[in-house]
Length: 199
Picture 1 (cartoon, rainbow, N blue to C red):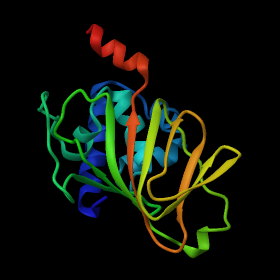
Picture 2: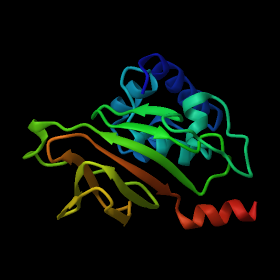
Picture 3: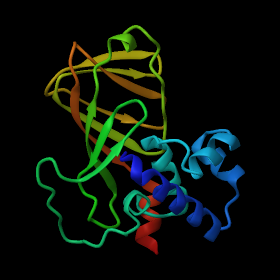
């Protein structure tokens, strides 16, 4: 994530939370952080992980793009994102996400091109596991990805893919000596898609 944008995103999160009359304690529980960690994030003192932003957007009932840009997506028929374009999100772990459907509204999925950096020191360490509601599809475009699905470890190569329930613990790092680029499609929970259809 671009450093100059962190304060703006933090302000949007705080403003939405206050408008919706949601407590800091509730948001800390939703984002699985301590109240102190949540307050620091909302104050713009820390960068945001994708999972943190995704959980905030879901709980507020807004598109993640609205948190990132301050503008809701407006297109409903189709959108084209040219190579290398999109909305960038940079994680603390060095993962770079490029949101590639940021202009499309009421998405049932969030598609990204993700670049995971290769770090020698991470290769033998336990991999941090995240989880969020819904499902996810990852397709390897270049390099190798070491994926941990709870107690299972898999190595994915170029052309390999994985589809999983993201409510289970999952984590990944680039392996094989170079960065890994992959497409990640985060699918929203079915019941939330059905709720939107009934509105």
